[in-house]
Image (cartoon, rainbow, N blue to C red; front, side):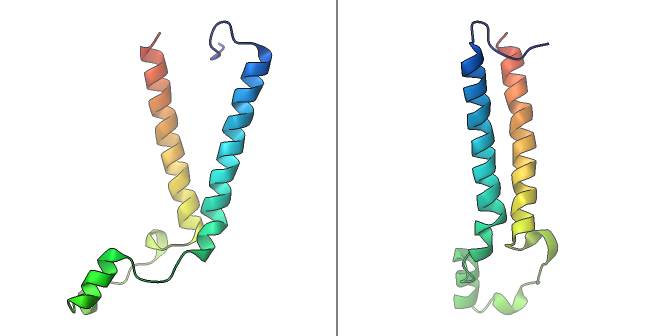
Length: 95
C-alpha cells in the first residue's frame, strides 16, 4: 500500500523524504548535542523559588528530569511518535 499522494512524481517523493530526514537529523543534533551547552542558570520558576526562600523546600530530581542530551533525545522520540500517529489519523480521515 502506497502512502504517496496521487499524481506525485518520483522527484517530489524523494524531495519530501529528504526534507523529512534532514529535519529529523537537525532535531537530533539539537537535542543530543547542542543541549549539552544549555544554561545552568535558574529558569523563571527556580528564580521565583529562590527569591521567596522556597528553594530549600524543593525535592531534587534526577534521571529524566534533567537537562542532558539523553533526556532531550527521549523527549524528541516521544513527540515524534505522537505526531506521527496524529498525522496518520488526520491523513486517514481526509480520504
